[in-house]
Length: 127
Image (cartoon, one colour):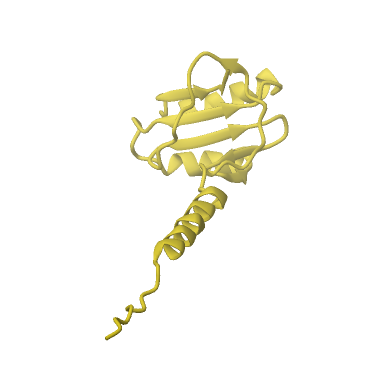
């Protein structure tokens, strides 16, 4: 009598294709970065890159624009938003373009001081 070979499909090529698809999607996926509204040219520093926590207040200042939490605002709107923060120890991350006039920086710091937000962290561009 002749023995019959069982018909089974080889799973190796299927597993290879699944892993290739998985790697493809992992490589091409755009991961969500911090919500930043302004394209700033930060001064260089020695510190490494800072990971921004959701509980922190993030303020960005360029030569012509101002943003808080990734949304462009005016100084008046920023003043109203800062008045709503009750936790005065909340960290305030400030990203300032290196070409911003000193007068705008002083205006921003005066607003922060007015609302008692003194826990400041200035971000810089890592080398």
